Image (cartoon, rainbow, N blue to C red; front, side, top):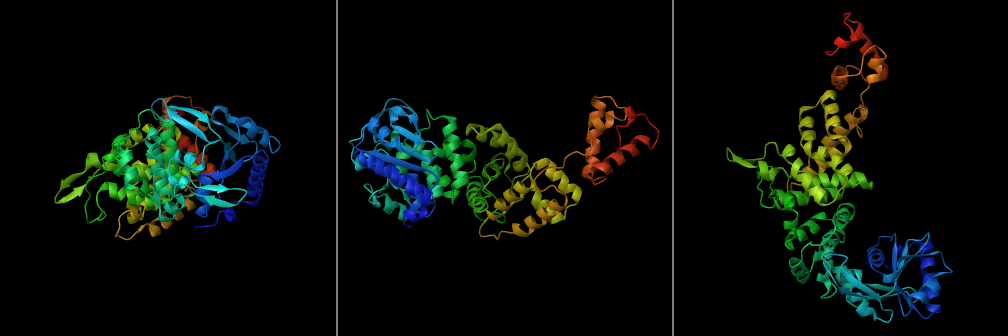
Length: 469
């Protein structure tokens, strides 16, 4: 496990110390806690910081912070403050009483006199309840979280864990991120919880972390099944037990294949948020059409048409997670086209076929990443995608369609300048012209206009009759 301080940027460390010193002058004790401590111990530089201050009233804490930076009250009733321009949240220990269902059904009051151990027990997992004394520069670990972190175990802090069902989804994404195994007693607690009262926004936030930060997404998804929460995501639950042809999928059923694919995806993330979300969701959902299409034919399991059949359950699943329509619209074409890269590579596809694939999927580079994850998700079969991916992307670069679909080189203004009137006939002509472009009849704006003029003048027909280029 890494020492804590070297992983924190020097500028941040100096400021954090100044906060602790200001609190100490008023009689308080300031500790780093939560994700920043966990990340630093794992050798990952923290990007934001949570400080919990003991032995100070809200007024005294605010007074201590005033000289450091403008103070922003985020949740005064909760004793939470921010300092403008710094990635720091500063809070007081608080007591919570469950008053209603869901993530927000709590009555909260601050209690600066709480002990460190008592404050730790209100947190979710022991590895998030490790404190670091900023002035004495030492860890304080009342619940044994450091040992759990070293062993890769995710364990609840107290019997108050079930008060917030969102913690089940937090366990999912933390199991993927550490990666960790979830303690059996924590899994047992989760089986008795339901997502009642959780907002769709909270659903998406936890799945987003699984996709963008998970080192082993399979760990989180396996926990979801073990905890019984897979039933709240029926499109995923349907993958479990759906058989596959063992010659092509020796790893097992569609669920097992999906877990392997997700781990392969995590190894190839780009670091671009939206692209990784779209690709990750496409990999997660790519075989959702198999449960509806799998049949035993001539002694083998086959899933003809599962690509197109997967669109409806994938859309339902993504909407349940509150994924934006913009991301859904980018994800679904990748699911529908996910088998085509392999087919086109084996056939040595023409430029025309590759242009059409780029048009249909929206982003060839993202589709290739889905294809690579799919190919790598069949152990012990070797991953045969690198050569195909390199070839496909090389062809796409030459055609300038690696990260965009081919843009039509002709438009309605071109036809109106040549005497056409707007209407259905113009639309049909432009659609057919686009097909000619995809076939390679012209590839630049100049070539497109020359082709158009030949079409209009070649046989002396009037513009309105030029619907068959």
